[in-house]
Image 1 (spheres, rainbow over the protein chains, first blue to last red):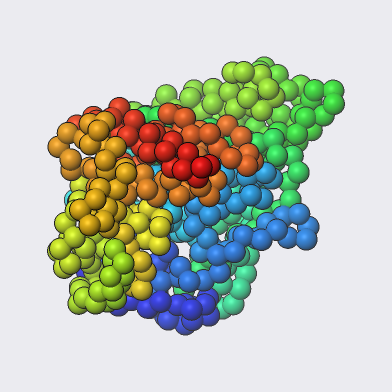
Image 2: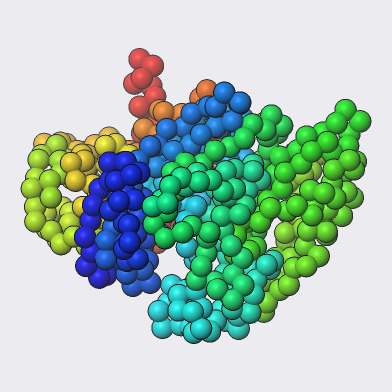
Length: 329
Length: 172
């Protein structure tokens, strides 16, 4: 680990002032990912600005939504009474991730900005376009069981590892940013980028910007929502495939509205818009669910070790939707 | 850097890069806390910070200045084992013992999470006011602590018995 200076910021303005103009500065949340990456010398910051003292409140909004301070811990958000009742898919997604110890440390902002767990990104002896643009990608022909089946590029097949973000994508969350040029907002769906030819640029954050808060719009039918994570062991493992879903059924048994997002399949949390469009107005039955899943995965492409995830994703979508209709899948 | 460790104030000079784990073990001699994977995967380094369990290997010590840290050395008192430690002995909750300090601290932190009604991913009803802790809940909640000897059955029995006794004590 390279030496660094450490500053604890009292508020967002102080944090932004400390990091301003310093490309080697990093904002530090719970450290569960950044400290690990520093130890592997993947990250080599010269200054750490501790932002765990920034707002961490979780407060209902007048419109029925929720405002979440970026310094809230993953545990605090998952355990929040409002989240558990109104957005249960978000509690379940967070609790499906990591361990209790890590969830106690990790912040909401840090969870969103965590880096991929691609082992070739972590291994500084391997070729990785994300770590070193132009170096090549050892994952493409390597061990790629955990890699992307949607939205990948020749340059990068890594996945975004967050569970929480999959639920946030399904919920149309907005991310409030603050930075040297002032505050602005962006949807979570637009915050993360697909890899293209610049997998090293992972988000739309500008230099010096930080995440101040996350806002959830009201979504009454999210009371009927869940998150399912399929992985190589029963718990404490990253997703092969995960599905966040909320379902609104009309009285005639058709789908009035639906939210679907996938994890473990792409460089970003994957909002399943094609599947949603295919479901709306259709009967809520396994045939419709399968057709929607087929529509979403139509453009999927497998690598040597992960082609099974295409069928796995389809089946998981169907299983989750059946679960939400009360049909034991 | 200043900390409160097992109730005692300590001041120590340390490299800015020190993890809380390395600070505890190498600078302060609290070698009960163990280094397993050093990357947040095994839980051997689990300690309590203001009563909450964390992985000290992923914690930069500098970030925890002024906080109250409890290690396995702080669980018992005056030669008397903590009830959980006694239960681990009685139920063979270990073989080599390397993961045990982390298991103990983690279980103490878990008990507090249960008191605070924090759910887990296997909790059936997210909005319930209280959560029944059965074997499935207990195993999920302790899944951040690996035991390569495979003493899990004894670990689960020891923790389940201690939780039952604590709840009886609360009701009494």
